[in-house]
Length: 267
Image 1: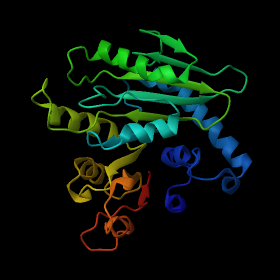
Image 2: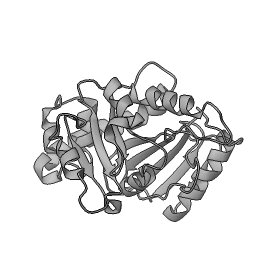
Image 3: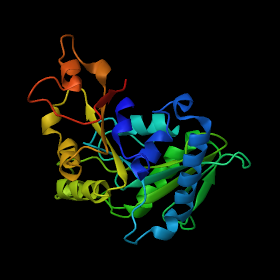
Image 4: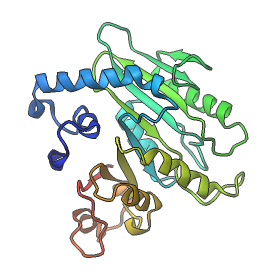
């Protein structure tokens, strides 16, 4: 998080990052945090109206290969259980908005459009959200193939940062239902990652070759200067003794993947 100070101070990406727990509140100051919260709240209020326009607003895109651990990262950030298991659990983009309103009771709203009035469901039990996401997935992607139509989840709570996460289907070249699945998943990833106001959380399993990660290659292509990419290394507890993970994350060697803001390991 320390290296994020190199970013343009008032850029949408910087505002989104600072509003999360990656930067402690005592470092930002309560007044600064409140000012950013108000700006991000305003963005969320107009997001639905900008759907389908050329205006791109800030969000956090979580990209990675299939089974890279994206669901676990998203679960930690949102508190909801995303569908997981063998095969393509995520068959469409899931746009999750976290909003804060201390005057309202917490609620989760799921729908198949940005104005939350199509196939709408309201739930108060966080543990049931994953099953509702699975039901909406069957609506927008009923044949088991990847759909370009997103689903939307809004989480309103009494405290916490305001931000929007885009969970994008993992890149894969294997599918029993779709021959061109790699082309489709790459195209979806590039579509959302090309938004210059989007932060890219590039999720890579610790045991993988970072250089050969298609998600990492896309991030490097669409964010050449590395201004908005953070590497998230998952499954570190699965590594055997003697792993070179630390050296890869420290980017010490000439052939290591270089990210301006580095890598964060999660267990």
